Length: 531
Ligand SMILES: Cc1cc2nc3c(=O)[nH]c(=O)nc-3n(C[C@H](O)[C@H](O)[C@H](O)COP(=O)(O)OP(=O)(O)OC[C@H]3O[C@@H](n4cnc5c(N)ncnc54)[C@H](O)[C@@H]3O)c2cc1C
Image (cartoon, rainbow, N blue to C red; front, side):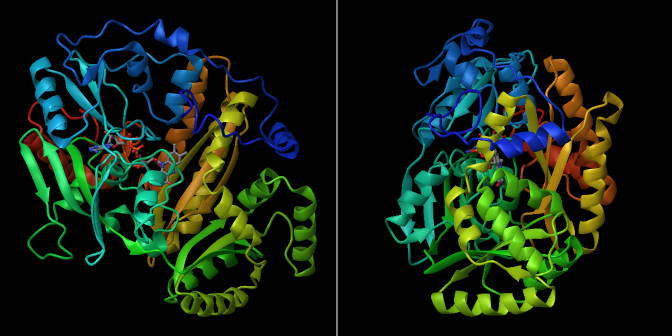
């Protein structure tokens, strides 16, 4: 069972080590526990449904409507934890076949309702926000559509229903010896359809590719009919329409059966821990590694503040003290060194040789490799970090993340500008913010920058949102000013919408709007997004 008002499996908790609580107390300030509105309180506020004649696949039960009224963005959290959420879908539909998706769209047309496709509900940028409009809103849950439809190992293709979540998808491929290799941090809850329609990126994208490299084709159900997307390995027949479906955020239609490229499960898949003496050296080392043609699966490079924060959050004080002692002996000092996790993947021989070459490059930048134990710990706990959001809220801290991507020559100034914008955003309110970053996905020409910030919740939803707005808008403006993309992986949704035209230009936004108004003339599909 997933938590209704937080992240993840109800049975899983991530404790906050005492040292981490002390660090936050010192850096951000003391707090009172964050509010936790009850489900009953929220249920009592749900207005009557505007649906006139529900059909059998459609529920107007208040609890279903509540659970489909938000995702996982910070404003969503404020809504369900403070109880300030005010808009709910009028109904939730549960199709079990593609034909039933069409039945729901026909039903929505009859009711003059709008439809929001709902995958795993893990959007962190307000994709699932219920619009404030004078029409009923139907959340179209894809949870029943989670089967493997076909696998063709010869072509390395598999076809799934769109609502399949990460663990179920991988388990179904594993029985055939294959993997998709797409592991976003939200893997446990997010779905294949959601990944495609938000242009998601997984931990090991350096080897497997982002979702746009893995999405081979499928079928989009639109108001104008079915859009077939054949899985050509390549095509020069004009612009690739799959690229428009990727990132369409429910605006163009419902992605039904989805074909993906699969890979034989590699024999070797290891992650090594490496420390670099400074951020400058570390960024240069990573850039060199990416250009060296190595069998890398991932590079995740934390800046000094994130390195320090992660070591404290990890607990294990004695082992960390030994590690720090060892690093000092090797000439690396606290508060300047940066930790990298570097993955090598493929046949045992290639991965082994690849690691030897990787180590040679690391040495050129005075990096110190510390073996596989940190990498193994990361692999074991890789999906646990988001559970910290639950405990931090209980302590009275809000935590949010944002991300961009930019060319190598701008990585350092952009990260500095984002962090500076965030650290100073609440100074007029005399509030401190703990901010840190890492490079999470690296490319030949540049890198993503992923920034986390922790600050104090206020007593009211309004003031907490005010703080968040300041943090989000100052950081987003810093990204835009630096020439970075407004999102490397989370998408646009509601939260990034004000910055879309800075990236696409007004002509680009107009072009997108023309596509949506052609495929969805009645503004039925997730209206207001991507426009
Ligand atoms: C803790 C946490 C960690 C995260 N880590 C990552 C990460 O590492 N990488 C990353 O890329 N993202 C990450 N995200 C963001 C989020 O998980 C992704 O955006 C994900 O792709 C959303 O998938 P979903 O199934 O939950 O979609 P939802 O949140 O349900 O929907 C997102 C959007 O997709 C549309 N949609 C969903 N399914 C369909 C469909 N079948 N047809 C048409 N439209 C559809 C919805 O209408 C909506 O506009 C994270 C989120 C959280 C909460």
